[in-house]
Length: 133
Image (cartoon, rainbow, N blue to C red; front, side, top):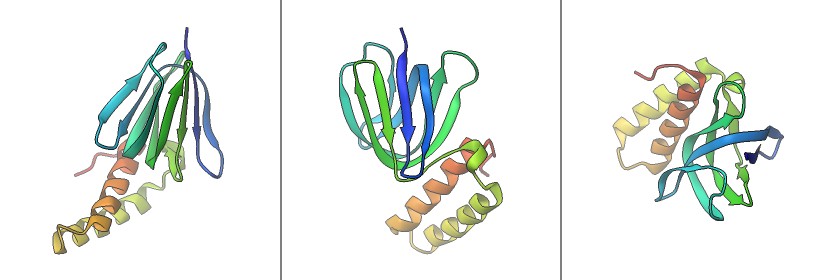
């Protein structure tokens, strides 16, 4: 038995299909993985990397900038205003965004907006397979 998974942003369905497992990070809940038979669940997601383990093939990594995950009856729906697969990420742009956000955080460590911008850039780079130094 498998999970029916959909990862959706306002522009498109990024991925839809069957998977063995889905892992995401929820607000104040940490990382959570969903397998078949998981209890119903609804949660807000952090800026995070979502991992979808399809029945066949390599894991799919998706940069998600918040949103919601819902699990019910072996169906997992991930809804996010901004979600990107590795192929969609402009690495140079993400590196520049990380540099700018890092400088902003150095100037004001308590700047929540700069911290979120830094986290978004780092998640994009991680999903794209670029080491963050």
